Image (cartoon, rainbow, N blue to C red):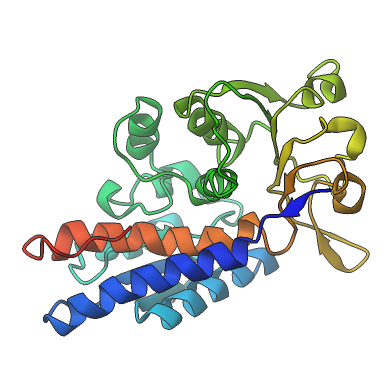
Length: 291
């Protein structure tokens, strides 16, 4: 029987630690960190995520700035907003909420964000540094998945890991993060042959394909760690890519949906913002360290 990995509890502890450091800095005359989010969509998932960003920031005493643009906003206007945020010394992190409306070049607009403020690690420069093994902001969702794997005290080195999904936002960076931990990593996708057989050999299985309850116990090795990154609506309820009830008795650890990876992702976005703030504002406060 599996142990449930509680993303909410992990996030709570992390927020408490960061809040202490931020409070100390503010008492010494440093301004609070600031996250600015650009939202150009009424997509329910995007609005939900932005509201979570605001909530976490408020809990920690961090300034949150929302720039809500009309869905018909043209590219030039969006770029002007990002340029202004890049130049604003009181803004530490910039989050461009995707997907963008049709007609806007997502890659081009994303790369307008200053790499020093790109707290979700989506610019080409940060992506390139990440894959080269250099210090860079890491996309928050795969980073959340890795943090929760580590919370089990699993020695990742040498383990067989399978990532189910190859998206640029989750699958590919997840592969790299596990590789950096010296796991032996396989990526499976829609064209993979014998996908169930490959997944069932994994000591660590990370699922990010956007298909509700796709993975049942036949995909899972006895005693595996199962990390569910998916979030879908099924019969009016939020569920993941893993059929939790069917896999629970076979895995050693498993993340729930909701309450798993997603519960930590927003906190890590804020953590990246605090790290940018620490570098930019707290240079002379050597005792301040966001862990």
